[in-house]
Length: 394
Image (cartoon, rainbow, N blue to C red; front, side, top):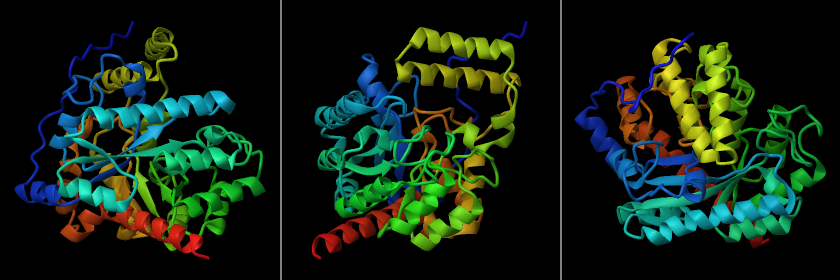
């Protein structure tokens, strides 16, 4: 019987980060557009975002250590939770983010605009933003979308892993040939509200339909390159080129299953599968519990050689590929912290300066690294805000 080692702390060997990289990282506005710590805020009664935690990826001390200036908390539930139940859960999650800000006013500030993010950075605070991960939460009602926007949501992923009634997902069998007429109205309303259209998780046809309709640049809040890892929710080179033409930005996802093809396709031994099944049975509907324990199981399996090892450098390979295809003005960071299996060496937000150092060592200019760390996302947000103002004045 295969025995997987129990590992209490997944600390990899120290990686030297140059003084130049640390200075640049501190100077830049570092933005992460996708984080699932919301589930911990809501479900994990022992979790304190203000304290350094032994597990998970995000808390204020580690965000400070990693120089993270702005974080989009994901408002998420599975795509089969719909109707009033989805709206209620979304509102509870939005409230949990706003409460975290209220309880930690010296460190966190609620942000809904580029001006807010810049002001937070100047005040040495962390900007907390929100993204709605899945159009199933609007219950086919643009009024509900407007309510979310009023509460501070600043992007919406058109689908999660299942189709909505108006858009096809990359994780489901196509049912609509992309966007329906109502789906196109959703894109137009997002433009009018100044809320970014997020095309992570959508089917390829949905992506191209959204680009045809939108008046503003779109984002992929947490997607990587399909040329390197053939996950359907990653972006093809043609999609990357189209995103660049639109003026948008792809925020590279760190999820081991989306950045490493060997890890994605590797068979899972029965012992490993049994361990994961036991985790889900024990955690039940507590998503935070399932995600964190499953991540530990995957790390153990990588360390034991049961699954292919995925290290943080793979993130840099995806950034580099996306830059080569889309251009340096169209790439950013969307980790999926606390929502997926992180590669070894990027277990939490404190490790983020490693990316800055690696890009400098690859020959990227300091200006271009600043764009990738957050400047490109700020530019897209500004354009989305401007398009909304111009649209309302017509």
